[in-house]
Amino acid sequence: MLLDDLYRDVILDHYKRPRNKADLDNVASAKVHENPTCGDSLKLEVVKSPDGTIEAIRHAATGCAISVASTSLMTEHLAGKTVEEAREIARSFIRMMRGEQDNGELEEWGDLVALQGVSKFPVRVKCATLAWHALLESLRD
Ligand code: ZN
Image 1 (cartoon, helix red, strand yellow):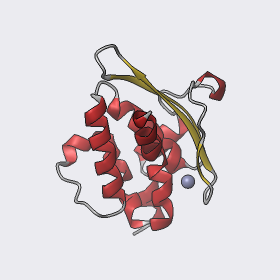
Image 2 (cartoon, rainbow, N blue to C red):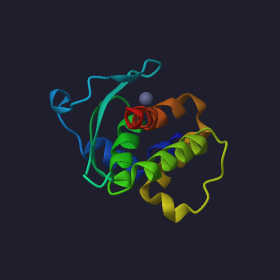
Image 3 (cartoon, rainbow, N blue to C red):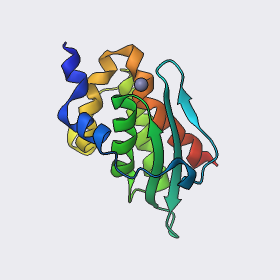
Image 4 (cartoon, rainbow, N blue to C red):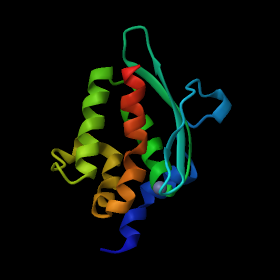
């Protein structure tokens, strides 16, 4: 497998133009999540609507293309989902990255499929899952 597979067009696009990105100071969460092995860092804020669904996820992510793209893709994918659905998707995504689970129905994953190849690079898995662990932690609060 070529390294090129890691940086598919979708990943590069989300890295260059991260969706739902906010200034660090404008993200309410005080917690900074980090992946020291790569230098990835992010703050995450989950905005819920009155009915409990996720209205938006704002982030201030910096780091490598994979971590920023994974964060950006996650915020798009989970908007409009219920908290329970988001948890389920996050756990499932983390299992997929660790190679513990088949991808199931690929259509369900949408653009997240672009990150699939990362699971073959164990060193980079933490980059791809950082945002998702941060999300699970935010949803616990
Ligand atoms: Zn990284």
